[in-house]
Image (tube, one colour):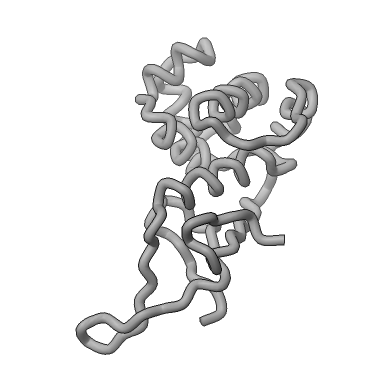
Length: 149
């Protein structure tokens, strides 16, 4: 199997390399995710570390992983809940200052392992991008997912 397109998380840009499929009852190849929490943590780290702005779907992924409603996140970033919804639907670009704060909040709330990132370095990464970049995860050891090299 080349790579598994992992869309179950709500993102369309996540690929897991090195997964070994098994056969279901009808003989079709299927992939199981034995460590969903670990996988989602690596996806969140990939989004937070990436050197371009988040997409609306990525913002929704991060927010839900933190267990926050749109209203709760809006309160933290000093915007109204409608703004969060508009950002998540890609109706408007995410406010860069709010995105930097969301990245910091995700690092704290999700206990992400982000090496040596300062506030200014995270802020520089919050630049809107025309296209979402693919997130590639090494899935050869599902007990310890990691970003693919």
